Length: 123
Image 1 (spheres, rainbow, N blue to C red):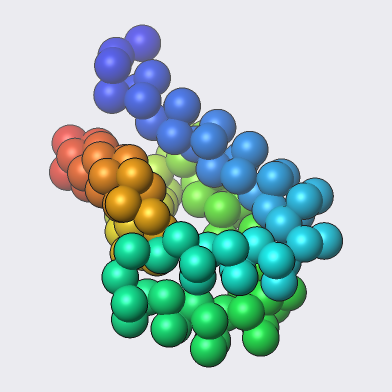
Image 2 (image 1 turned 180 degrees about the vertical axis):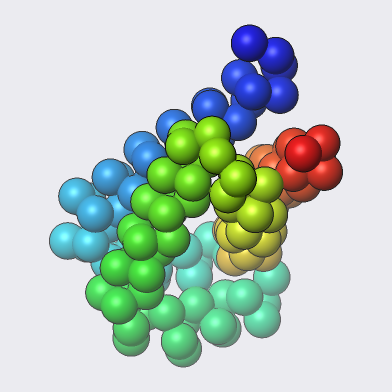
């Protein structure tokens, strides 16, 4: 297995774990989750967006995130023709996480987005 394939499988597994976590924990605590996200957001516009848009729609947003993460996981782990597009969608999703998170999350999600785009470009 090449490094690229191994990284893709790891990323696919991370999305699967993320979907399960969102479905089993975040969904039950969605409003608290998004309030915490807003309080740790390092960009003021992101903090305002999370506070004013996501908190009041926390259950719906969480369901969408579960479906998105599960779809990305299935597409990547299928190892078929949808791996590349799923990596691009995951990269954009990671960029959104970078913009709505703390400074540490900005760095982590930024690196993860870069890995997504690098892997997608290699396909």
